[in-house]
Structures are given as structure tokens and as C-alpha cells.
Length: 188
Image 1 (cartoon, one colour):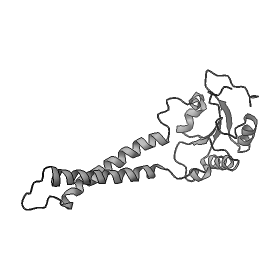
Image 2 (image 1 turned 90 degrees about the horizontal axis):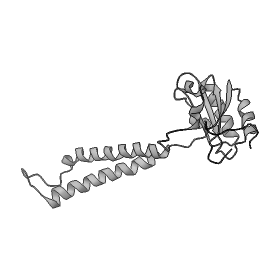
Image 3 (image 1 turned 120 degrees about the vertical axis):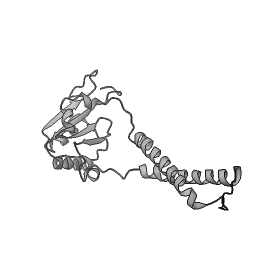
Image 4 (image 1 turned 90 degrees about the vertical axis):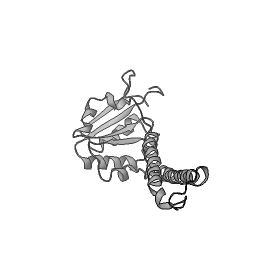
């Protein structure tokens, strides 16, 4: 198995509950580079996998504050310094007239940061993953539940990982690798 080859075990389950219990066993065994693939969101899966809360909010909040601050600065500069116009005796620095612009810039900066931050945190776009080489994985979007354990996990061992997955009672366990690479069961 070469360093560039991404090898993984793919375990198939019939129910969401069995998939959650398998994720808990992997988490308790110390595995970190594993993922659950389900046809719909499963309540409690994040806790079962030991995933922390998303860091996306910590990116979106400063972006929203930046949007409202830049909008405020822009309006102050344009209406109060660069080209002040006094119309009908109204002050050049009127907060009610600023609200729509401040709101829109806050939403714009927050939304763009949320989209691009999600791509960055999820390491997207990833054009190919060896898991798609499995013929059984196509049913992950229909009615089956899968747990995949990647070889990049420090605890990954072909024999020990397979035995741990077998203890979770899956309907099928498959060793998946890139099509170009041969993987033998006796590799470390």
C-alpha cells in the first residue's frame, strides 16, 4: 500500500440505529478519521462520532460585523464627508436611512463567508474519493447506512479495524481502494 493510496473499510448497516452504535464504538476505540454516510440526517450522529461544534459561526460573525462596519463607514464618508447634501433640512448622518444598506451588507458578507467557509472547512471541491469505487455505496443515498474508516487514521490496521467493524454487526464489510492500486488483506 503506497502512501498516496487512500484505502478504507466500508461497513454497511440496515438501520440508522445500527449505524449510530457503530460510530459510537469507533469513537470509543479512539478512531478519528471515519465518517458516516446516510440517506438522511440522523439525530445524534454528531455526538456518536465525537464531532465538535462547527467552527463556521466563528467565521460568519466577524464577517457580519465587518459588513455592517464597512457599510457604516461607506455611508458616513459618502454622505458626510465626500459629497454632503442637505435635503429638506435632514441631517447628513441619519441612522434610519442607513438601516437598509447596513442590513444588506451584513447579510452579503455573512452569506459569502458562510458559503466559502463551508467549502474550505469541508475541504471541497474534492473531485474524487475512492469510496465511489464501491458499487454498494450507491445505495447510501437511497436506503442504506454506511461507516467508512480511512487508512489515514493513526489507529487504522487492516486486521484490527476489520474485527472492530465486524463486532458492530454490519451486513457487509468491504475494503475499498483506488482502482489503479492493488490492496492485499495482509498489508499493515
